[in-house]
Length: 217
Image (tube, rainbow, N blue to C red; front, top):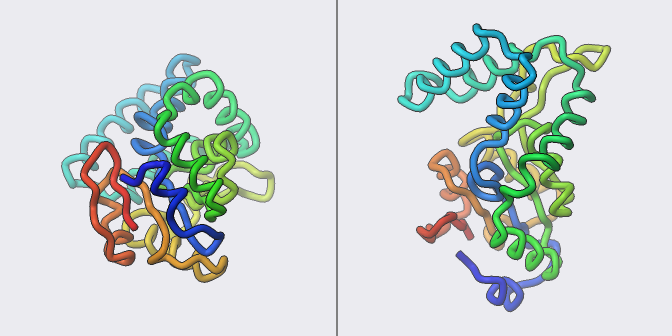
């Protein structure tokens, strides 16, 4: 992975992007698990939600469920919730439980990219309520992530806005962002920690730096 000095010595300017995955990259662990923990502590999660979430997570881990089905099931448990309330909760959970999990090394790297004038983007398969508070705190102005579908009253329908950002779709979303914002993808940086980001790596034709994080450049 590039050091702060190497980033600052490299190409500067907004045409260079710095794309950051969220869970496992900017933050230790999974932000969605923090939200689930909150629902459990406040007795908002029913037995069916707990067992269903555990079953879905295990099936996904062992390749028996697609990510979009896992995400859709999770969205179904929140049907009827207010999106604005969920975003407020996301802000509170960041301050109370997630801020301390942000990797110090990644804070330094984000600052270095900002100093170089790069275009900063959180690019994650997480939901907006999980990704936006971290992007705001780290002064990352752009967010590519999944979003809940809402009705005319701003309440969740239980569905996820398509296309779902994951794997190939995530790579396509980054390509579209670059085209719309004058960012040169092959001059950009991408930080991630999971195999689902390999499609984007192939688009960038990058090398893998096998340390704590992967950087695709």
